[in-house]
Image (cartoon, rainbow, N blue to C red; front, side, top):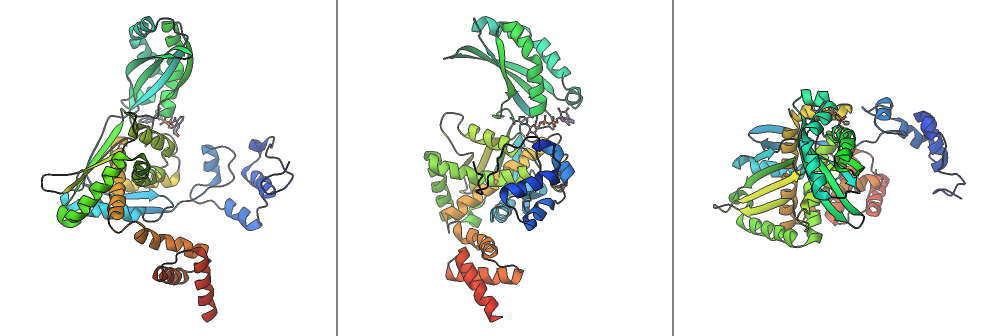
Length: 429
Ligand code: NAD
C-alpha cells in the first residue's frame, strides 16, 4: 500500500494525538515529502499561536491565514460601522463597500433581529400512543424547564434559559417517533454547547413521560426563531432606471430557477461568511441554516427580495437565520476575532446579526448590479489578475502592477501569460 506521494507509508498512525506539534509536523514531512521550507512555513504561526490553536482543535500542526479587509461606508440603524471581513476572494470587500456607499444617501440599512432563541431537538422512538405521549410531556413542562435551566446557571444569570417546549409527532417507516423542541434563549452565545447539554440532561425525563427511548439530542441548525433582517433603498437617480429594471430581471430569474438562485444566495453568503469568519463564528452552522431556511417551503428560494418603491427606487431586503456568538466558541479565544469584534463595536449578538445581514444584502446587491450591467468579470478579473501575477512568479509590488497592467490590456489573464510577461520584463531590466 502506498500513500498519495507514492511512498509505502500508512495513514494509520497510532498515538499521533500524543505527539507534540513539532513531532506531528516531522511525521507529516516524511509522509508528504515536505521540504524544509514548507515545514518552516507551517511552523510559522501568527497571532494565533500553536498553544492556543491546540486548545481549539485536535492534531494541530500549524495555523492558516486569511486576509482581513475592512468594508467601509456602512450605516446601519443610524450607526456607522467599519466591518472586518476575512476571505480569500477578490472583489467582495470592495463590492460591499460600494453598495453601502450607494445606500447611505437613502439612510443606509435598517436592520432588526429576533431574540436569540435556539432549538434543541430530543428524539424519542418506540412511542406507542403519540397523543398520550405528547400530553404527558406537556404535563411535565415546568419540571423540564427547571432541570434544563439548572444545567447552565451562567446563561440564566445573563437572562437566558428555556423559554418553551414544542412536541412534534412523526409516523415513520421505523415506527412512531416524537421530537421535542426545547426553545432556549442563549443570549450572547451561539448556543450549541449550552443547548446540547440541556437536551442530554432532560432526555431521561422525556423517556419517563413517554415510555419511549431517547435517541438524538442536539441543537437544530435551522435557527428559524433567530432570524435577522435588513433593508436598504437605492436611489433611482443614482442607479438609473434601466439598471433597476435589469436588476429586477436578474432577481426574477433567481426566484424561478434553482441553478441561478444557488449562485444568487452564494453572493449574499460571500459577505455573510466573511464577517462570520472574521469573528471566528461557526460558518458551517450559518451556511446550513441559511440554505435550509431558503428551502423552508419545499422550494429553494432567494434569501433576498427586490422591488421598486412608489418613487421607483430599488428596495432590497434580506432575511435569514443567524446563530452567532460573542461569548463561547472561538470568538473569545481567537485573538484576531476578539479584535474584529472590537472594530465592529457590537454590543450583542442581535446587533452582530443585524450587521451580518446588512453585509449579506450589500454583497448580494453589488453582485446583482454588476451582473445585470457590465458583468462581474471586469472588476473581478482586475483584482484576480493580481493573484495570477503572483502565481506567474511576480514578487515585488512593481512587478505585480506591471504584469497586471499588461494582462488586462491584452485581455489575457492567465498564469502562463503572466510568466511570459515577467520573463520579458526581467530580461529587459
Ligand atoms: P460555549 O459553550 O463555549 O459558551 C456558551 C456559554 O457561555 C453559555 O452556556 C454560558 O454558560 C456562558 N455565558 C457567559 N456569558 C454569557 C452571555 N452573556 N450570554 C450567553 N452565555 C454566556 O458556546 P456555545 O455558544 O454554547 O456553543 C458554540 C460552539 O459549539 C461553537 O464552537 C460551535 O461550533 C459548537 N458546536 C456546534 C454544533 C452545531 O452547530 N450543530 C454542535 C456542537 C458544537
